[in-house]
Amino acid sequence: MFKKLFSHTVIYGFAPQIPKVAQLFILPVITRDLTEVDFGVAGILTAYTSSIAVLAFLGLRVILVNTFYKSPNHYKWAWRQIYGFLTLWNFVYALLLGFLIYWIIPEEAHDNRWLIMLLNVAPLVLFGPIGIIGTTYFQLKQKPLQIGLRTALFGILTVFLNLYFISFLKLGYMGWFWSNLIATVLSNASYYYPINFKLGLNPIFNFKWRLIKQSLKVSLPTVPHFYSSYLLNSSDKVVMDLFGVGVDKIGKYNAAYTVGNIFQQLGMAAGYAIGPMMMQKFREGKDLVARNLIFGLQFAFFVLTFLVSIWLKELFSFLLKSPGLDEMYSLGIIIIMGYNYRPMYMGSSNKLFFVEKTNIIWKVTFVAGLINVIFNSVFIPYYGFEVAAYTTFISLMFMGYIGFLIPSVKAENPVNYHPFKWLVLTFVLTFGAYFIVDFPLQIKIVITLVVIGVSIISGFMFKKRFEQ
Image 1 (cartoon, rainbow, N blue to C red):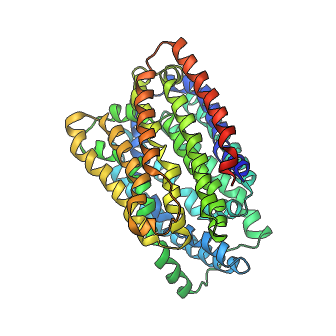
Image 2: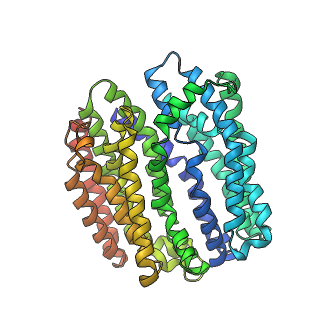
Image 3: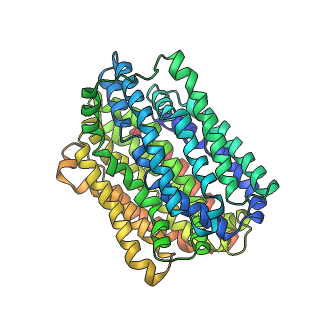
């Protein structure tokens, strides 16, 4: 099972990294045609549009997951009705998104206001929720290749489209929007036939309102929970914009997330892989096995984030050719190491999703998001945009570990996750990486080899324990 976890995580996690690797090779090319303003416009628009992204599905994915496990012979009937409801709802959401873009678009992008609105709204109008329906189905069926191949294929397409629109057509920030439109539409289209025809999961528009109301009663409390992801990962750029931080500085901060975004996606990929396995073990009453999966995943995250962080100075120097962007590696380390929260967060929250105690989850995650917004609002005006990386790190640690201290959460997790030990180790590794990054190359090579050697030995020593 431990091998299955990592094989699925590799597929979910590294399929998106195939285009990311391609992106690394073209970054030195396209950044010559991008300015800090381009990064800033894209960062601001992404931050604002992400602020309402959680409304696209109203948290109903949790109902898809639970009906799949709890009603394995009848889940399609519920799924088809939710599919129909979400298809109609997406038209309402598209209008909200369009109005938001119209009002918040930066002055530097006013000439392209209507086109940007169209490029962001079009995928919603054309295909609705088919993407989330398709990925959820194949995830729960534990068929990661169905998702991984699509992710890799359309991710690589996005990379080449970026190269074409940005470096050949010289469209600047608009190149990202055109690339995302084309890739998103084609990705959604790839799910349409297998979901609607081959599997028979076509939408029912004459849905039962009773089912929808019952589903929303469970799913809506998760909306603040999923919204916390926005508050933690994107709201900082909105706060910067509201407090008058220049678009160029927001662009620098956005560039600092270049590698951090990869680990954010890797954490999401790990969730896709480990979620069905933990749900199955919870159903079998094997909470200890579920916990050991989290331990193995946390160990792997520590190794990857630490090694990448100590080499981030060299990575940024190679990847970011625009003047001033490569100097953001110190912030990049804080951002990357912050995503070590993810495995332990899943350890405290997945059981709550299984028992449908969603009214507890949102309180933990939403408070973490509010902490980030409040800290950013207080400190950015005095200490500058750089402080946002540190406030995000603190907020992520809060979300990852506070659940283990809440009695109602602890009651659902009968095994000890040793959260304090993992938290201390996170701070130690972050502190170490922050200073090691400036060490001479020879010393970093030795440290890297030692970490890899110790990791391999430790993996073999504890493999049997993880698989108990």
